[in-house]
Length: 321
Image 1 (cartoon, one colour):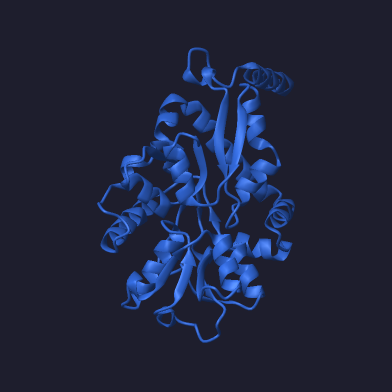
Image 2 (tube, one colour; image 1 turned 60 degrees about the vertical axis):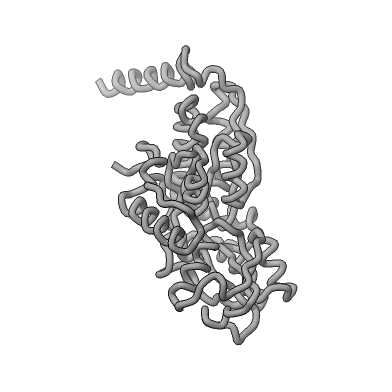
């Protein structure tokens, strides 16, 4: 009897494997390629593993869909690419970037959770006398505008009775911010993940982290029109990301070695970053509340012009049941 059950199970799997990825008559059957971002920083290990293992290409190969990866770490640049229809899915965007994009009228949808990395984001300085947020007053601070790091700076200043007007904020992406700090061209930099670790190893120090100031959430985002036209493709992407996370948990040592090589750091540092991050695939009601609170904060601090409800652009499938 058990043998019959096993044979039936194998037969069922064979039938499923023979089925097309997207059913006849669906918009997916017209899809020839999918454009997705590759976001390796601050330490997005599921993204790294998914690409290095060719998992997304394998998932779409049965449907004959070509996967085009674009290296974009900036949430703002991903939002611009989505708005320009040159990107279908943004693998990892900070909720701050998503809120700002949605507030600007961009047709985007959060389709999955990615991580809660409060310990990953920090303000870093080289000058040993700059050890407090108050010491940033009148200083040059470099970092990516319209991101979680931008929100961190605003929140840190607000907590000390200061505003963004109390610093000279210079727009730069993370690598350029770090380079400017090391070169002495700015006094502090907004950094994350391995960039923070490398800067500390080079003699810098952390002034403050996001923990206790903001609760950053990283998410996966799709163009609204792409989600409406190709829901199966979006589902395939989200499922593959979840499979990458499952593989990491089952093969952590191998995954950390892959991540360390990609980031140019030691395996020990990769493990430290892994421990700093809570990786997820779904959002909770708590995450939505945090986003709503973030909207209020950004409106009050002039980062957004109007209030919005995060529920209006979160796909139901992205929420934990």
